[in-house]
Length: 199
Image (cartoon, rainbow, N blue to C red; front, side, top):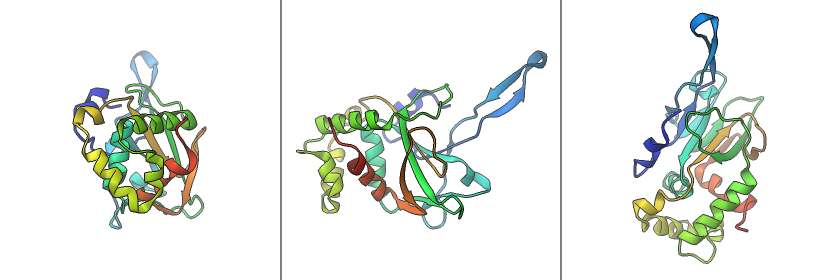
């Protein structure tokens, strides 16, 4: 996995990424090692969506890595982009959020309720708005949220825990279903409001 400092060092992490499947390899003296590979930069399809498919890079999950503000900033900056499952038998789209732990295998457990409540609380304390989840929920207010985030310094955007936001066509423990077939990142933003509120 990429080094945590790689993501912190950039003003805007080069999201999103594809997650390679772990591969078993032969090590020295007959040992077996797990090669977890490295996150690879994802490329959008011709329709500007990141595709899930039965072959090629589309079999891999998609992730966004960054602080709460950086994740929301990425989603706001790409409202017309999104996710699309081209697998007819697996049309559902899932999202999970976990702490980013470089150089460790992700267990597949996404404590989304707790983490997104923390994300909402953190953004609420950082962004000057009565309730940032209401801003996200009102399409006409998205520009106000973008303006508030644009007004933050790089160091403010980099504050907080690094998050690993994973999207897949296959559910994992505590992932939530967020859509079916095709979904824009603007719609993904609404998931934060629909499912999670600051405590």
